[in-house]
Length: 420
Image (cartoon, rainbow, N blue to C red; front, top):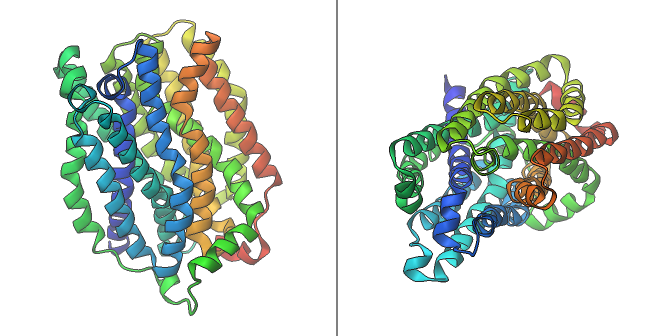
């Protein structure tokens, strides 16, 4: 029971991070109209999508600076700091008046809020993953670490339920004018509760028993020295980030703006994706404990490579709610099967002394690319006229991941990680 409480406490901030990102993605069209008025719906949407993506540009900086702080000062204090920064960004975006009220200051403040969120998120996921890997019982590390991603799926589902309810109750005019602010304000109300439960976190035994905690300067040099491991991690994480943002944050926009389905249908599909991810992730994490990480990584990256584009082509051949649901659930299965093994694998190949910083740098660099998926997909469809092109982009990410898995090796000094 004590370990269950620890998992709940540490993943709480991860929930807020993903909830905020999902809400921004779900209501990107309305946010674009409020803060980025433009001559066309496409231009307004692109400005909004680019603002969504700009938060990811700060992740590498957050990863290296906050990651070094966590590796030096401790997991608990670091996770409290990331929650604080994340909360500042959330409140800023929720409360800033629209362009019609304060002019150009509105988009500037929203971008600053996203930058603050991105800086915090750069190490939040890494800090949570490392914490879970260090409190896991022997032989169950994959299962424990899978709950990092599992908490994100709770946020996806919760945001989906809220978005679906709001879009079903409010008329389109009200939703566009002010209704999109409701889920952001709900996120603000959750913040005090999250601080209460995260403050009770205990430091991990693995960190506490170390006799030497490297200084930030030492950590920076160590991360540079292990650049091959970081590069391998980036290639593996890319498939996770591209597939995740394709099936979650981008789905409402894709369903509504590209497939011309209703808001409620697109959000309902996203809700189902969140639930599917939540079910599959711990199962695949536990399976990786039994058969190893690499078999799952190779299998699911290979399946994504050969099926993503055909699945999307089948979808646009007769776009309906049912087809969108089938395709998204298939991509959800591929994402969860791959990610359930990938995240714990990444905690194992990074040297323990710089585990948070190294993990976070690799993950954030990949997320800088993968997080731009909604904006990139929107532009590619507009430029090519091919509504299935997001599937091609996912296949490219899968090919890069597959290459990284085949080339990458676990350092010999960390080979015992699988047993710990």
